[in-house]
Image 1 (cartoon, one colour):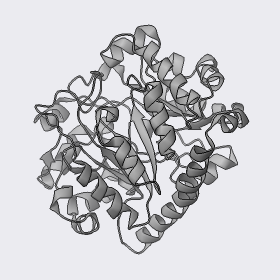
Image 2 (cartoon, rainbow, N blue to C red):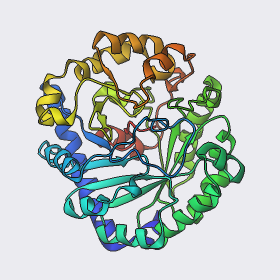
Image 3 (cartoon, rainbow, N blue to C red):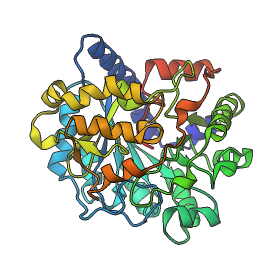
Length: 391
């Protein structure tokens, strides 16, 4: 990682160490203490600031909405302030495409004591945008990378997406940003995603971390045929373990297995929840149902009183070892109906879609394979590294 550290802007590196590292570990410890006392408030939030996007990706939960929405800057500000009051300073910023959100840089600058992970398709990450992020110094762009020249345009519903993504990585790295790449692994890109050439190409570009997701069939174009099967998921898990031992110049992250290699659902652990662009508090971005909204009052009171969000932690583990959207969509609908939860997809057909959706294999199918590297075991036990709910 020496080449990444040398390339990273000094202020960006300091903010990462303090805001993400030191505050992150402390915030996660506070979350663990709260949970022991029965005082539930997630370790961190994922916030979709806008539904607007310049692409139309397969398996995206935002596509097909009857009306796009976005949170006001005041609403985002309040979410961050109330979360900080519980000792959490890390936020994932999602869309749509968050770089279309006009108040984005203002939010980053105002909350300089926080650390933000910016989930972006990269097509708008120009040199000038990268420079703005460098000046904020508390943001790591996580750039989606969905395949090569042939696969990327099909997956993302755009033109020259591969080339534009490559340029975005270069712009971010050249600006001195701590830059990550995310790949949603599916049937059409698993060979590339698990290849040595792919990882080495990112190392050569001075990418700091590579975040693997498993494709989840959701949204208007769910494309179930792209979902991995059990053998694919086992292949991916073995690849992650091997890559962490082999590659020391890039951090390899997953969102599905704990330090002992046991599969889990971050929402079911209460680690994180998703606030969508309409203000609804969802278990995660792909479970598009809610009974609560940020407009209902203070977050602390909502989490304390919401039977829906509290029951997620007890019921979801009975539905699936991994992702209930994939493993058990019909039973998930039963849980939704029991709480009279509102369809928050914006398409008004998510319940019907889940009832008709065939079961597909999630990471819960994978046999237990413990982490081998001590640093990954430590990070997964003592910090929220690798415990994201996006994907």
